Image (cartoon, rainbow, N blue to C red; front, side):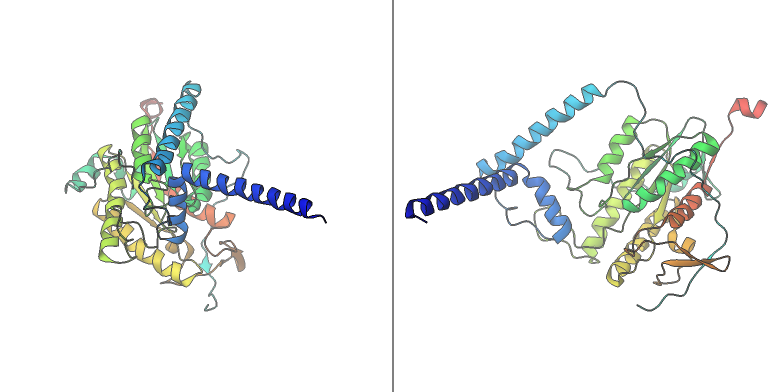
Length: 358
C-alpha cells in the first residue's frame, strides 16, 4: 500500500470519528435533561455534565424545551376533536375467571421544572369529614352513574389495570382510564412526575369517581434532593420525609376533588435487597393512606405471602399455579387477574334513579 493511500484511509477514518463524536455531543447538548434523568434513574447519581451552567450549554436545553412545546401545541391542535382517552384494553371475549381460594407453596430459601409548582402536600386534618362526604363506605367505593375510574402506576399496574377496566365495563358499563407507565414512581419527578400528571388529568376530567394507585417497585433507591445537593440516602429521615410528601400530594389532589383512593401495595419480590426496600415503602404507603381514611390493598395478602417470604407459585385445587413471572417481580396472567379481582371487589355503582324506579 502506497503512503498516499494510507494517509487517505486515515483521513477518512478520522473524519468518520469526528462526525460520530460531533453527533454524540450534539445529542447530549439537545437532550441533556432527558439524559440526566435517565442517568439519575439508573445509576442513582448525577450525570458528569449535570453541573455545567455556561450559557451556550444551557441554550441547548432551552432550544429542546421550545421545540417540544411547539410539537405539543401542534399535536394538541390536531387531536382537539371530541373523543375518549386512549386506554389499555382487553378484548371483550377474553375470559376473566373468578379466583378460588389458594395458598402459596412454601418457597426455597433463597423535580419538577423550575416553572412548575409542586402540588400542595399540606394535610388539614379534615380527612374524616372528607371521607364521609365522598363515595367511600364499608371499605369500598360507590360510584355514581357516569363516573369513571382512573388508574395510575408503574409496570405492575400496566398488567393489572386492563383486567379491572374490562370488569368495570362488562359489569357496570363504567369507563376506566389507564395512565400507567413502566419505570415510573415517586422518587424521580424529573423523569416522570405523577402528582403533576394526576393534577392535569383531574383538571381535564371532571367525571373521575375513583383513583387506583399501584406503584413503588421502582422507588427503593437514593433519590435527588431537588435542591442541587447530594442525593438523599434511601431510608434516611430526609428521604422518608420527602417520599411521604409525594404520597400526600397524590392523596391531597384526590381529596380536593372528593375522589376516593384505592392504594395497592406491591408484593414481595425475589431479590432480597429490593424486597426489603419494597416492604419499607409499603409501610409508608399504608400509614399515609390510613391517615386519610382511604382504602389499602396488600398484594401480599392476596398471594398469601407471610413476612418477607416470596414464592412464584400458589397451590390451587391441589395443583401448582404460577402467579409471578421469571423476573421475580411482575405477575403472570393468573397473578394479574387475582389482583384485578380484589380491586374490582372494592368498587360498586350506585343504581341510577331510572334503574331504581323500574
